[in-house]
Structures are given as structure tokens and as C-alpha cells.
Length: 492
Ligand code: ADP
View (cartoon, rainbow, N blue to C red):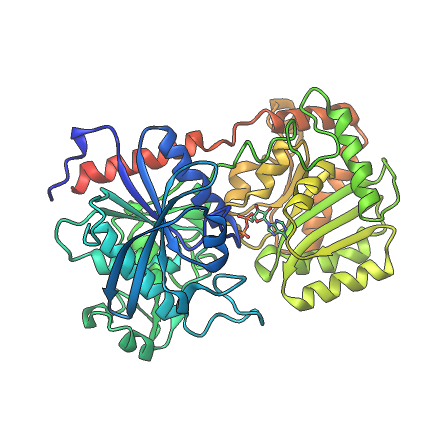
């Protein structure tokens, strides 16, 4: 391999993602793709982003220049070159209007069903990225590392694997539950190399699994928290891929996501009616009153306000919350829920809202400003996730002096320390954790929170401890850097 990483401190990294905040976002992947390259760039690295040219993203990307036209298996694409708004990180958008110029969600149609041609869309994207990565698109730039993310980019390491003079490949698992599964016929119609149809490659129980391209072929795999990296090697969390991940355990590491500490800063957050910091926590109460007013809840400062934001899907344990509601409304609490997802969860929550408007408030949909207001206003933030690769909201909560109540899984277990007599006296407690995927287990954690909520002095100590923690990207970006460097030293 011709690359000599020792020759320079600056790493050349191509970061491929199917979503990047603020251009387009459905979840935490977009946040990572928006933040990590920026952090690496501030450390001196030459990082460039590549993503499909969704119509909405093109509209937000500002000035774009057509820099290449490529004829590839599966179609023709043009490459649009620009920069990320605000951060200036160089950006390429892979433009194939028939595939990507569709409004709304990048993966789902208006009925919430996956686009019927998702395999063709992301296979073509992968082939375009590969062409850029091998410096065959006339851009006169070649990365040392190509960092792929989730199943949409899974074919890249697989297709690159046998190519000479290729960059090192990193594949990050943001959520193992989404695997990019398609029938065998799709494997054929995509004209993938026949050698890739094996259980050691892309085949997964007679289906084509895009994610296996990353898991089987990337030089290095990472997961978005150390605990999730361990969990996915077990049958309980491995989604059928635990055997492969265990096999690759020496190449698998966990790095916790950072958060955008500028966007999520209670002292400067423009969405709040009253900004505050760890020394002016009395001002946090004003945000609680404002949210109660906005969400038409009684302006009761004594009721413990529970916030919840996220996708309303099985993963997030919404059913645990629904099961717990009959007991929960007998407690001195109010509940504000913001989310969108499975219609039956939305309907069930709406029914509760109609029955108990004094305690429950629900906003269906995606609302960034309201998400900030809830983080600032709530006393506790509830995340009863069945699994949670990293989770961002618990870190936002800690930063906003809102104590997280979380199930001990994935990144939640890495970032929240349960309040026990021991952790209280050791000065480490930051929230409330429970173990079982059961509403009773969640309710007892909430009961512990309600009890401690009466002890305002201890509560404030916990708030301030959380607010003092460093969740910035700096540390995580440094760990990714070390991972890249280690990889280049080891193999290239
Ligand atoms: P996931 O990626 O599994 O959805 P994460 O916690 O990693 O979960 O990231 C979710 C991100 O999306 C967070 O920044 C969260 O605040 C945001 N989010 C999710 N649902 C909504 C919503 N309905 N309105 C506003 N923000 C939301």
C-alpha cells in the first residue's frame, strides 16, 4: 500500500453518511455526521463529507458546484461540491435526481414504508463513494481512511476490500437493528460480485444484508458506545449478527458519541424563555412554567415534570410508558412527550392526553425548538429504551440539569450513574437507572426520583454534577483519531 501515514500528522478522511445535520436528519447518525468531522477538522485533519443529494439537503447546502459526472453500474451520477453551512467542512453530494430528489424522509415514503428502490439507491451511492475514495472521479484527492456509517454505506467496505491501493475502511454501527435486508434477486439485479454471496460476506439467512458488507469487510468496526459494543456480541442484542461480531471482536471498539455543546448549551440556547447555568438553576424553573403554559398544563412548580422526546418505536420502550401510565398519573407528576413514529403509539398517547389533560401533554411530530424547551423545563427525562446504541438525549438532559431516568442499556449505562446510597456518598450519582424491560422496574426508578425531588439540596447537587460533565466531541474525536492512526499503522 502506497499510503504513508507517518509522513504527516494530517489524516485524510472521507466520511460517508446517509444523513448529516443540519442538511437532513432522522436520528443520532445525522448528529454524529454533523459534529465528528467538524471536531476532526479542528484537530487539523483533512475531512470531507459525502452524502446523497436529497432535494431538501441540496436546498440547505448553499452554493454547490458540479465537479464530476460518473457512469457507474446502476446509473449515472453527478457530484456536487460545496461546504457544510456554518462549519465549512467540504461536502460532496451524490446527485441522481430519480433516486434522491424526493421530499421528506431519506429512507421512507409518505406512508412510512421504505422506498421500494432503497437497495438500488444506496448501492449506487456506495459505488459513487468508492469511485471518490479511489480517486477515480477526477477530484484529485484520495483519502487514507474511509469512514462508513450504518447499512446504507455497508457495500463500500465490501466492494473496496479486494481493490489495490485502497484506503483503510472503518464502519460505525449506529444501530444494528437496521440491516438493509433485501431478497436474493436484488443481489443479482445489483450486479454485485458473485463471490459476495456467502454467509461470510453479504448473505444473511438467504437474504442480502447491506450491513454485513461493513461488519465482514471493514478493517475496523466501531459502535457508538463501549457498552453497546459489548452488548451486540450477545444473542440478546446481536440481532442475529452477534456471532460475526464476536468473531471480529479484536477489530471492534466502542466510542461514545459527543454532543454539540454549542447548540445544546442552556446558558446561550435561543429557544429558551430563560437561559441559565449551573449557578442560576432558579432560572430553570422559569422554563418549566413557560413549558407548562405552552403545553396547557397547570403551572404547578411542585409536580415533577417528566420529559420524553424521541422516535415512538418499540426500541424506545414507549409501551413500558403506556403500561405505566395508570400508576404514573396517581403520582405527583406531569408528563410532556414529543415524538413521532408508529401511529398506534401516537393514538394511544393521544387517548391518555384526552383523559388526563391536567397531567399529560403530547406533541406529535418533529420539533427541534420544543425539544430544547423540554430539556430545559423538565425535572427528569425518561428513556426506557429496550436498547440504545448511544442515545443523545440523556447527555442533553445532564447538560440542562434535568436528571435522566434510563434503562441500563447501551450508551445510557455508559453515561448515567444511578443514585444509590453508595453513589451519593461517593459523589458520583447523576440520575436514576433501572434494569428490567418492565414498567414496574421503570416505575420504581421514577418513584426514587420523586422521593429525591423533595430533597432540593441533594437534587441541586446532582443537577450541578451532570452540568459539569464534559460531553463535547473533543474526547470522542480524539479516540476516533487514535483508531484511524492505529489502523493505518497496523495494516497500511
Ligand atoms: P435515535 O438516533 O435512535 O433516534 P438518539 O437519542 O441517538 O436516538 O438521537 C435522536 C435525536 O433526534 C436527538 O437529538 C433527539 O433530540 C432528536 N429527536 C428525536 N425525535 C425528535 C422529535 N420528535 N422532535 C425533535 N427532536 C427529536
